[in-house]
Amino acid sequence: IGGLLVAVVIKYADNIWKGFATAGAILLTGLLAPILDLGPPPNGTMLLGACLVVSSILLYAATPPAPPAVRASAARAAMLPPQESASETRKVG
Picture 1 (spheres, rainbow, N blue to C red):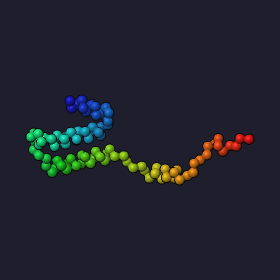
Picture 2 (picture 1 turned 45 degrees about the vertical axis):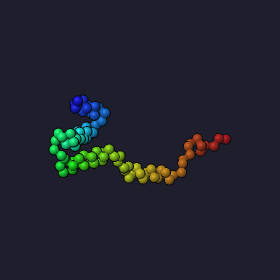
Picture 3 (picture 1 turned 135 degrees about the vertical axis):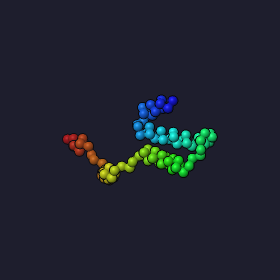
Picture 4 (picture 1 turned 90 degrees about the vertical axis):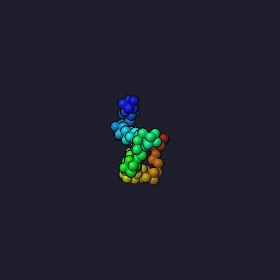
């Protein structure tokens, strides 16, 4: 089943998301194992790793802010009066 899931993730996402999915699966397994009495409880290193995985996924998924040049040109465009089209400026006799 794992190989099929990897194929689906790669088909509909990119390789970076595949890495995040793998890290999330390892994290979920590590957190569920003690609940199901299959492994030791998580230690500080695992909790630190969990925080890093979650924060990296959130940072990767966040939309980056627009570059300053784009914001400045958008602000200038908002302040300019609307321009008349060429057909409106011609006077019909």
